[in-house]
Image (cartoon, rainbow, N blue to C red; front, side, top):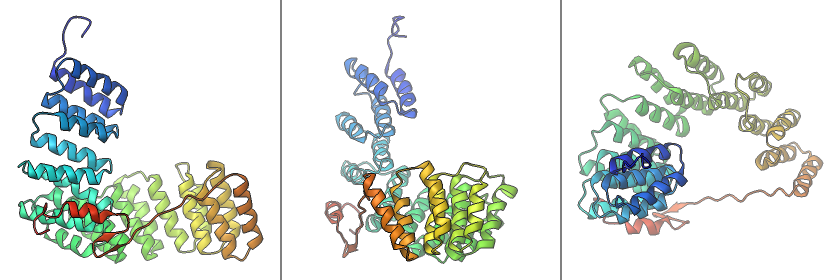
Length: 378
């Protein structure tokens, strides 16, 4: 187009950039960004919005923020694009800072704003910030929005507060598949697990079609409640009744059900006959069950499968070593540890945090203090 003497305009650029965003080709996207800068299109709202989305899809939210800050005029769509980009990439602090700037600029949030921010709070299990956003949802009159309600249910469930999630769910007039699934998963993870199965039955009676994530939630509930027969039934029903092809996650969930119940040989045969080639993570599910039930013979067979797929799987080496220790086979445990040291394998340090009086050990309390007064009632 350029060679033929037809100069691209802002519409051309805003049409090309989503292509690079979809395939996460940041290099070509930056070339278009450079072209836009040289030819005076960088201040265009449509080009700016496309650049923000492109960089966010390429996980370069730092560039998205720079583009956003340099735009002379920002409408509600631009603000929400920037918020969504940061939230989807896990930059929750940056997303909340932009939200605060957005409010101070007099821009009224849209439903999309909360659909981006609330899940981000759930992903980092920040209940206080989630509650503050919930307060703003009610204050702004968005509590009747089905998508926002689904986001709130998911957030509260991920933060372990199933009772508030259930309160929101019960007030919804026509919950969709996402809402049902979020509520079922909440009960599956935090209990009571049997309530998840009752919800699934209600979902079917209401003619709401479950999806593959719904069945993953149901299988998780069966695993946590020790319901082996029900787990088999739901696994078969997924494909026989709804035509949903089981994924690795579903196979892993059923293997976990069998393993927790002590049906280790059945779990081993089930994984061995999977229609999909089992991954190391699926085998590792069974290895953990072998440790719990102190079955070192099967643990060795399973570990061999894992080491063929991932020879330097640190977690699997540690689980096998702990299995030996739990069974009193100290020599084998020590031998495996020495072998790990010779291979240069080191256990990666983990981290955790606790929250006490709205203060978190990683300094999140400072972040909260920055937003005090940003939300109603804070």
